[in-house]
Amino acid sequence: MPAPSLDPRRGEFQLRLLTQLRSRYPDWSLEAAPDGFGVLARKDRAQVTLTLETLYASCRQEEVSTPARISSFVAAAGPRLAAAEASPESGAAPDPDALMWCVRLERVVRGYSRSPELVTRPLPGGLLAFVSEALPGEVMRGVSAEEAGAAGLAPDRLAEMADRNTALRLQGWREILNQHPAQRRWLFSEDPLFSSSLLLVPEFLAALAQRGGGEAALLVPDRGMVVGAVGEAAAPPQLQHLARRLYGMARSPLIPQVLATDGSSVVLHPAESVPRRPWSGWRQVLGLRER
Image (cartoon, rainbow, N blue to C red; front, side, top):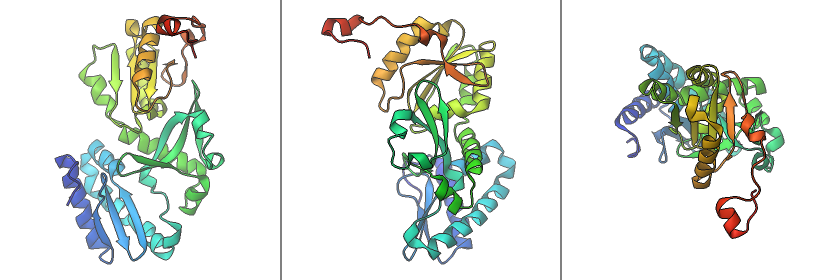
C-alpha cells in the first residue's frame, strides 16, 4: 500500500510502478518506501530504494509519454538491483533519477569528511552547491565522484543529471509565476530540502529577470525557500530588512544577504557591498555588535 502521507495522485502512481516492478522482478520483495515517495526493493541481504519524484515530475511535464517513461524507468532499475544483489555489503549505487543539486553554506560543506570528493558549483554569499542523492522522506546524502564512477557516471554526467532532475522536481515555480503575474514578489517553497536549488535552474532565473525588465533580486534565507523580487519590491533597504527577518526565523538557515540575477548568473546584490551600521536596533540595546 502507498504511504499514507502521499496525495492521491502520487499514491496511484506509486501503485502503478509497484505493479510493473513486481511483474518484471518477481524474485524481489517490492513495497512502498515507508518514509516517502519511492519503492523499497529487498532480496536476501540486498536492499535498494528507488525514488519516484523525478519520474513523476517528468510524467507530469509530458503526460503523453508517461507509459514510455515508466517502461524505461522499470528497465533501468534492473542493473541497480543486480549490482546490489551481487555486492550487498557495498550498498546500492547512487540512483541517477535521485541526483539533485543541494545548496548549503560552503563552510559547512567543506567540513564534511568527503568534501574533496563531491562535485560542486560555487554560489555567491558563501553558498556552495553539491550533487546529492535525494532519498524518500526529507533525507539526502552527498554523492562522491568515486560512487558515481561505480554507477557508470562520469563527474560531468553527474552534474548533467543533477541539472535535469533539479529543473524537473522544482518546476512548480512556473505555476506560481503564471498564477500571480501582477505580483512583484514571489515565494517559492515547494521542497523543504531543495527549494534553494532554484538558484541553479536557468529557466527560473531567466523568467524572473524577464519579469523585472532584465534584473531581479533573490533571497535564500532557508534551504527550503527562495524569494524572488522585481521592481519596487526589490528596493534594497526593504529587501535587506526582509532577508534578515526571514533568516532569523529559518529552520535551516542559509544567508541573510540579498542576491541578484540578470537571468543568466547569480551574484551578490550591489547593495550588500555597502557597510551596515555596526550598532543598530535591539543589538544596540543589548550591547551586541552586528555579525
